[in-house]
Amino acid sequence: MNLNQHLSELIRACFTGIWLQSHEHDDALQEIARLCRAEDWNLVSWDIESGLVLPGGVVADETSGNDPLGAIRAVNSLADGETPTLLVLANYHRFLGSAEIAQAMHRQIVAGKNNRISLIVLSPVVQIPAELEKQFVVIEYELPTREQLTEIAEGIATEADEMPTGSDREMVLDAASGLTRMEAENAFSLSLVRHGRITPESVWELKSNTIKKSGLLSLHQSEDDFNTLGGLDSLKAFCKRSLLRTTSSDTKYLPRGVLLLGVPGTGKSAFAKALGKETGRPTLILDIGKLMGSLVGATEQNIRQALKIADAMAPCILFIDELEKALSGATGSGQADSGVSSRLFGTLLSWMNDHTSNVYVIATCNDISKLPPELTRAERFDGIVFLDLPGAEQKKRIWNQYVEYFEVDAEQTRPDDRDWTGAEIRSCCRLAALLDVPLTQAATNVVPIAATASESVQSLRTWASGRCLDAESGGIYHHTSKKRRRKVSRDASLN
Picture 1 (tube, one colour):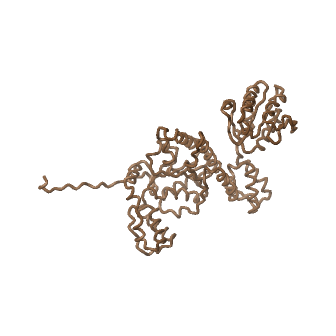
Picture 2: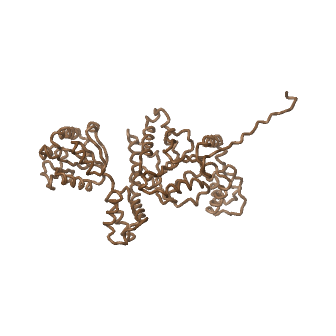
Picture 3: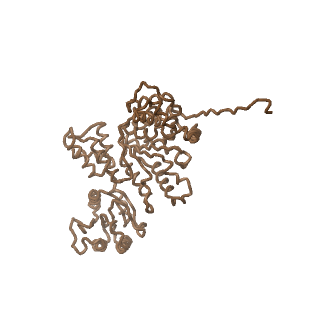
């Protein structure tokens, strides 16, 4: 439902307090003006600079002009009680901290039922005082659709060779999705200046500024693709196939993402970052620690804003590392953090359930027991995948990769790598190059996690067996642990 349809219904139903959230005030005002002309309604607007602007674009006198309180009081004299009158107050949230203004608005919203006056607060944020919360309905001015973005691009790219066609056009529209109309115009114009045609790279550059300004997410642009990862063949094929098969219009079939469970150092984070490069999607990193705010309600607002940015950046990868540490408080009573973790978890779950944007979530976890069980049910993720210690063939590829990367002599003897992870192989190669020593000597400085945390590794394998997908060979992961039989002496003298 577009803005005109939504507003038309609300005005006809005599809603007199409407909060319109938008960063595009001029465009929103133009749409409201078109609605008022079509319905023959009165439109009055106000902002702190222009003051009160009457129907027909006439500016009111200075007695009620720039006074935010005077604007509310003056609108009664402009209404006839029969024809709906809309008073649009731009950035009026700045003045609602005043008790006098809040009280005046309260009275006007109540009185508006009789004289057909509706107050519309046009603001980029929703900051409604407690005494007015029940009197406002909040609606959002939707960002431009792909069709509208196409019109904007074609209006700027006037020459035939300036506007891409086919799959290139779809990539440009994917990149521009989530931008405001002005941001899209700026991005398309910048691309024309730089390249003589509209390209997705220039659009992504401007779009990434949204992330930098928020401070809630970070953008990772990896140079490493799947060729830099040894093993994980089944996981690679599963994710790549599901992502490359879908388009922005396939909302019914959009992939959810995967939860990666495994031993530290087995490539969970590296896989998430390489997936973006492999599929041509930006990788957004969500650090839940950054979302924790000191003020009441700040954390919940931050997570909603971060997820909204992720929706706007679609198609993209959303990477959440060590999820169990971020949501560990959600499994407790809530006394430790006043229930903040539980509310954050609830917001994340709701978004994972309901979002229709092409955002692919990669979450990693080292201890599944600390995650709330609701997170691991079907349809939260496409699969829970276990990354075990690499096998012999995997380790061979990992050795070859890092021996070449760190320019280590490939002909030398390699150390005993039993129960080593990929991170430990990398560490050995790096230390050999750093210290200028053979790999076997560098290996004496590497203590595998399978030795330092053997109980945790075994516990992970036991839990994952029969419950998770196998990242390497596909299908259900199964771990067979060989238990040593206790030796019993048969010496008759001890009987």
